[in-house]
Amino acid sequence: MIWVDTIVQGILLGGLYALFAAGLSLVFGIMRLVNLAHGDLIVMAAYVILVVVSFLGINPFLAAAIAMPLMFGFGWLLQRIVLNRVLGEDILPPLLVTFGLSIVLQNALLEGFTADSQRIGAGALETASFAVGPVTLGVMPVLTFLSAIAVIVGLNQLFYRTALGRAFRATSDDPVTASLMGIKPASVFATATGIAMIVVTIAALYLGMRANFDPTIGPARLIYAFEAVIIGGLGSLWGTLAGGIIIGVAQTVGAAINPEWQILAGHVAFLVVLLIKPRGLFPRAYD
Amino acid sequence: MNLLQVQGLTARYGDFQALYGVDLHLDAGEAIAIIGANGAGKTTLMRSISGVLRNAPEMITLDGAPMGAARADEMLMQGVAMVPEGRKLFPSLSVEENLLIGAHARKAAGYWTLRKVYDLFPILHEKRRQPATSLSGGQQQMVAIGRALMSNPRVLLCDEISLGLAPVVIRDIYAALPQIRDSGAAVIVVEQDIGQALKVADRVYCMMEGRVTLSGLPSELSREAIHDAYFGVSA
Ligand SMILES: Nc1ncnc2c1ncn2[C@@H]1O[C@H](COP(=O)(O)OP(=O)(O)O)[C@@H](O)[C@H]1O
Ligand SMILES: [Mg+2]
Image (cartoon, rainbow over all chains, first blue to last red; front, side):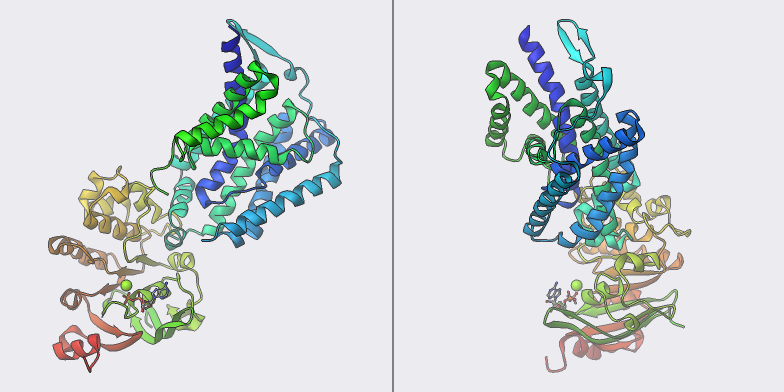
């Protein structure tokens, strides 16, 4: 039953892509901002975790917990100081600014950490696995997938069950009317980006524990994230998970047929979904 | 001292000047009406008072404090709430969430709570889980009014709350006004329906082309004077 195994591995891989994508989806859903530096922010967070791990000599999960508030603060300031200024009717300025940010981050990381690849060591966890029937599951991919589910459940709870989430949705609908409710759109957006950076940190943790990374790999992560968001339908977090799984399964199935087809198969799946459902699988009712 | 004072208020959209030195005042507990034809500048005046449009600080004072330059969120925190023209409900939010968000930032103790708003407009309780924009026009207007009341405002601005509604629905909505006034809010209603305005307001201002052309007690204003102030003397 090689195919069952291939598909299960693909689904689990989809969890990683969903983690890459969730922060992008969140920010896009709230402020219609496509952050082209999203992948580089994930890489940056991976370096932050790496630094914390090596300075404090602690376990990567603890290090990520320390990195989260730092990344929240970074995201908050980034939105407050830079991105809020370019939000508006015209979608070009935010694209240009986040593209610039992507280049700045890559170069800053190259300066600070060189082009050498790095890895966040996770000890025995890296290779641990267990068998479920005919399928052998890696503990790390399973943890990644469960984390993706937890992130999406958490974000949905935040969105639909809390006063902050209500303010997010109201501000997303109509920032001027939201300000008539005493809401400050600028700080709502800053908080949203801060929360997206917490998700980015979780994505970075698994990125860094599962494979090598270096300062240049951000844009490729952005593309997977982007495809997952678009496949799922803009603004739907469960759709984003579905999108991640579709890319993941396409990649593992592609690779099983011919190892060279792995990356290509993911992109082809993306194009096929777009051809069939141009607005994604779970588009919002209105935009 | 007046609760709200507007002095020499000007407003422009780019090169176009929409208000030319508007003066008006509102006392605590008072209800005033602003009437005027389409394009007279009524909405611009409401947007200026509510902080959506910002002006020189001294053009708008609240309890004597200059507030003309304050943002909308700051005005709300000071107790100035608005029912905007066109209702502007949040489509992603249910009826109840639209009401709750009215009290998101300003949690002032006062008469209005979710329950009191439902007592005022019982139909909203029945439809509380529906998306706000699935309601009829009149019910949506009730949500917009309830949403503004949830902050327990000192000043409630109502911009054309009867626009596009059937007469029976307008009557239901205006029937809420006495209770709103009893709760302590001073009210400014913007109306194109002169009869309605004269009925509910303690004082009336008439605007034309960005200026106040007439003001006074409803009983003092003659039909002719209002006609001239509304359409221009030469019309
Ligand atoms: N956003 C805007 N940009 C440019 N002109 C506007 C804008 N809003 C209103 N105006 C103009 O300002 C004038 C006053 O409009 P408004 O305050 O909406 O009047 P009213 O509410 O009395 O109908 C009108 O001539 C209108 O065309
Ligand atoms: Mg108007």
